[in-house]
Amino acid sequence: MSMHARRLPNPVFNADVTLRFQDDSTMANYLISFPSAAMVVPHDELETVGRDAHAVINEAKAAGVYVFGGGIDEKVPPALVSADGTVAAGGYPWAPQLNGGFTVLELPSREDAVAWAARIAKACRCSQELRVFQFDPQS
Image (cartoon, rainbow, N blue to C red; front, side, top):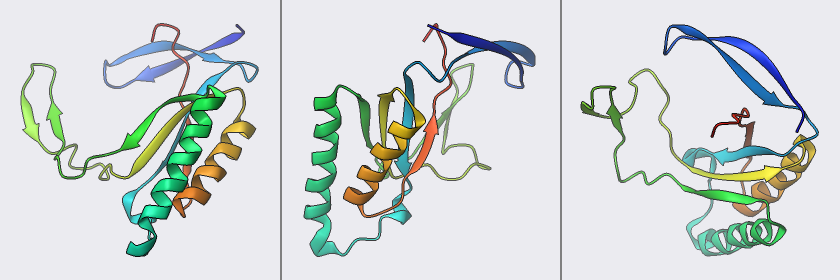
C-alpha cells in the first residue's frame, strides 16, 4: 500500500500529530450523506423512495463496497460525553445539528464515489454530500 505522511496540529490534544494518507491508487471510505431538510418528497412517494434507496444499497452490498449506513434517529437527542465521563444533554452548542441519512462505501476512486453518490441522490430524490475519510492505519 502506498502512503504519504503529513504533520498536522491537533487542537484537541494540544499537540502535533502525524497522519498517514492513502495515495489515490488504494481503497478509501467515502461518506455519502444528506441532511433531513434536503429530502423534500411528497408523502405518497415515500414508499417508492425507500424502495429505490434500499435497491441502491443492495447493489452496493452485492458489489462488495458497502461498509454501513443508516439514518440519524432524530427522536433520540444527542449527548455530549466529556473525558471524565460527564454526560450533558445535546451536542456542541456551536455546531450545526447532525441529522439525515448516510452511507459509507469503500471505493477505489473519487470518480467511483461520485457515481455511487449520484445513484443514491437519484433514489433519495435529493443531492448528496460526498466526503472521504482520512486513512488511519491503526483504525
